[in-house]
Length: 207
Image 1 (cartoon, one colour):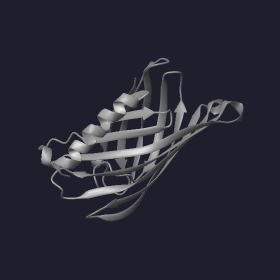
Image 2: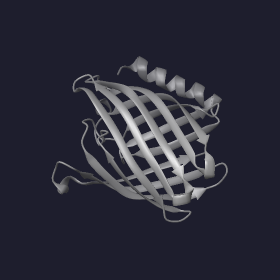
Image 3: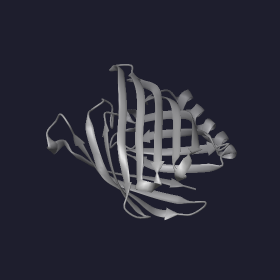
């Protein structure tokens, strides 16, 4: 990734900031900072940037652009989905990656559950094509805390790896204009020793 691409990202985000109706800042897998603009209720652009303990040339940056929608069903059930195209890579240009992410959620308040799934065709210019996925369930204990578990092979770093994620989703702040959700969880490898388990803290702040 070169300086022109970096400047393009900067000016794109500045322009979208003027159009944005909702902003979201968050942390993914404890190592990726995300900043999202949502405008016209349905369209979103996200900048995803690594926080590796390395120099800037080894950092990973990714831009996502997509669409989200929500459908009200019977008995207060809801179906939510979003899809995003993305492109990114290291600042030193060692590799690039791009693909499509389709996320879907079915909210069923009657049984306090959210069923979640992700389909993620992913291409890396060195590792080539991978079909990535995630499928999971979230169970609400009360108005603030939920338990969740997922089976996934979506890369936390770069290579797809079969893992089970389990933890808590905590609504620290919830209001009409602002919300904060924190998700401490364990990421457990399926085909590797359990010593390779990782502990992560994710969060998303809407404002």
